[in-house]
Length: 209
Image 1 (cartoon, rainbow, N blue to C red):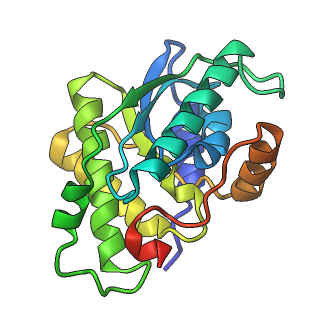
Image 2 (cartoon, one colour):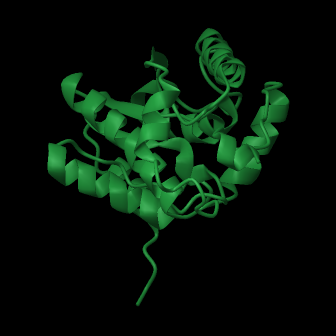
């Protein structure tokens, strides 16, 4: 059985877009992960970042990542995009609610699961559901997530959940695998270029341990 190439699927969808500007809601976990994603997406979409990450246990860490995301977006908008000559649509951000109790309630009973297992899948769905609901209520053409950039995240599961929510809520999901074509390596370079804070754990108390 051939493994799906989500990056190729994304590129195929982008290639068929009409000339009108399409609006995309991008769930983002942090500025470094959003960097490559925005470089890929902003020539083709009017992107709005959804910063919804109740999995981040420490409020100080949450706010640090949010501030970096806002600073990065402000810099890109001010400079009219990346220094690569590509077209660029300005970026907006939705600063969603921060309720860590929602995460702990969702993963109750899964506290001892190994990192990358069922607890993480619950977290994926929690954040993607919020993105799908927000995309639907605000009339976005597509939604997707930066989480597929990370080599530590399960790309197949993320796309499976995204498509399931798309079918359930009748809002289009843009499949992705942003780490393809050296996407993760590019995020490291962009983080250095823009002096972005790079955390060393996902965000929850379990990954921090």
